[in-house]
Image 1 (cartoon, rainbow, N blue to C red):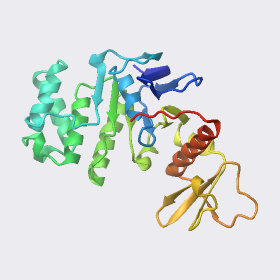
Image 2: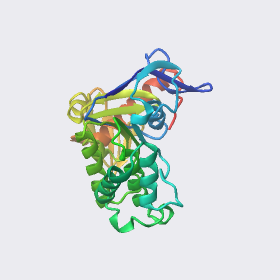
Image 3: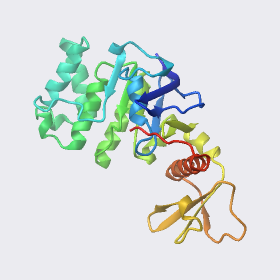
Image 4: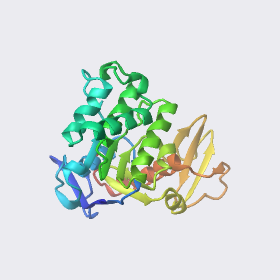
Length: 288
């Protein structure tokens, strides 16, 4: 079944972590068979949003429509496995908790071990795995019971390029099997593969939609050069600094215009919002 969250507002004490005063809260739909990628900088609210979908946080405002907890798979930002158990034991334990036993558990466990590239480490303790291997194990544990809703908090952080391919194949397979998948990521190149993007900043949605929709709806221009005209609207990309012009290029601008990628779009929209908040004297909260 699909999952959704509408009008969501979350406060930690006096600090608002999701939603903003007068904004109506955060709306996110995760259809069956789709991968929704949540992106944004540190403190944008990505983890808070995923914890709402996991049922770990009850929002102060709004409502959710989620599958039963037994049909949810969740990989948090931590290791996601027990260090004293082997790869096989971790998967067997979690599978058993979800009611898998005998041949069905063995078949599903072995399938995920092979897909994650962990066959050679199947009898190794999780504490002895590399960081990337342990993240793949955590993802496999979240998927073992074929959940209706799969939630992954930065699953590819610390994962090598080859393992990232294996991990994305696992995520794509879960979606192809009908799971509704929502994940956060700091790798914007992989976020472009998702069915839908949700760009967060300071607990509010800046834009959402497919990558093509987000790119087509981006207003303004981005230039690249060694010396920005307005440093407060610029950010470093390699050896140059890109600069955002919300209302289009100013007359006489000499910098070369570049086609913005997702990283440019996320940074530019965040800058635009923060300049607007600073101008209006608004308060910025923030949550991971």
